[in-house]
Each structure stands twice: as structure tokens, then as C-alpha cells.
Length: 116
Length: 117
Image (cartoon, rainbow over all chains, first blue to last red; front, side, top):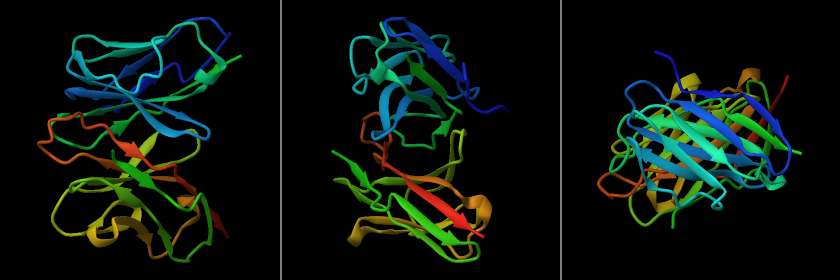
């Protein structure tokens, strides 16, 4: 199969609005990760799912950010009351096992979020 | 805490020339190391990875990398660069097996490669 897919590919929103970003991992992959790529900050880890639970949310920058995963598959990253500093490319990755293994993570094409 | 340093922000090489991109890491145990490439508008593609064993690892597109524990380095090399190699390259480190922690990756800030004809 298919690789990791993300939607939308681009999202432009106004400051203060909520946005939802979607990730479809590779079928059968139990681990799912969200990263953020912004200018000057590089790639930052946001959250990690093992199945439907999130044992590591340490990278979420504020309580405006949340994520869920359902059916051990699709994940949604929600940003409430968006701010201009949230503008970035949000990347999703999946891997077959996850912790305690460090197996290969396969990345999606990303969602470019622009907050005006 | 683990960290990755890519000291070169931007490198320009001529097509056909050799390439070496530097990566230094800081980690308390044996790390798992990765190189990814990102072409404009694309996601990250895995070039190669080191988990254990032979310290010289071969990857896709003719790339290789060598793990040097004594220097805490994992430099990426290619003997002859092609114009299509122009992209951004990221080195990443992850925890080794059985750490019990989430296997999140810590990335370097990337090296942008420009190839001149």
C-alpha cells in the first residue's frame, strides 16, 4: 500500500478560528506521531499515539492543541483559537510498532497551516 | 536530553562532486540514527538508518553514512552528487530499544543542499 496521507494539504485560517488536521497512517501501523516544522524552529515533536492512547503529549505547545486517534487508525490534530505563531507545516508519521522500539517512521506530505 | 546538531545550514556542490553532510548527536546511550531528505513541497523520505551492527550503512539513492561513536557523529556521504539531490537533509536521533519511552525522534535543523550544473 499507500503511504501516510494528510489533509488538507494547505489550510489558511483567520486568527482565533479552530482548525482540524487529519492524518491517515499506513495500514497496520500501531504508532502515530505528529511533528511541527516551522521556520527557525526545525522539526518539533508534538504527540505520540500507541493505538488510540497518547502516552507522550510532551510536545504540545499549549492547551489550545489537542489530538485524538480513533480505531487505531485515523488521527486528528485540533488547534483551537489559532494564533499567528501556529503557522507551520504539520507532519504526521507512522511506524509499525512504536515504543519500546525505535522503528522507522514514515512521514506524510504535511499540512501547511497559515494563520492570518 | 538527546539533541542533534547539523552545523552546515547551506551547502553548495557541483554536480558530480562528492558530498559530506555533518551530523553530531548527544545521547546518553547508543542511539538509533536516521537521515531523511525533504524535497520542496514534499514530506520526509528516509534515506538510511543505523540501529546496530556495521557502522557503515548504505541507503537509497547512492547515499551512505558512518556511525562514529567516539566522535558522536553520523555523517552522510555520496561519492557523486546529481542535480536531483538538491533538497533539505535532516539527521535525527531516537532512543534505543527497550528504553520504555516513546520513540519520538529529535531532529537537527537541517542542511539545505544546492547543486550547481
